[in-house]
Length: 62
Image (cartoon, rainbow, N blue to C red; front, side, top):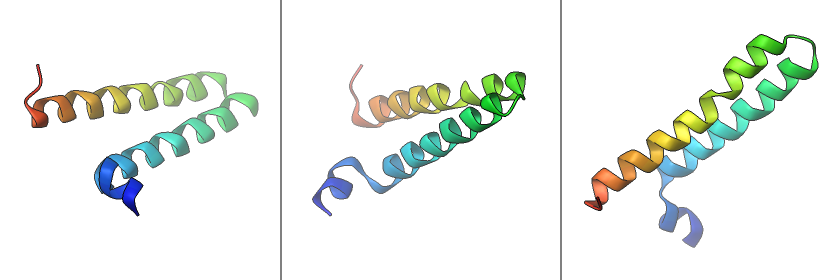
């Protein structure tokens, strides 16, 4: 519980969504739908980048 409190519930939820996106993108890519797998796989780094950006703005660090 200490880990969830330190990271934050919303941050943990976004990281979980990114993990699900990566797993599903791998499934699509390996099942033969390569373009959709690549397209969907690019969402995870974008979401993590937005998470870092908004956390930086909310903490006041620039």
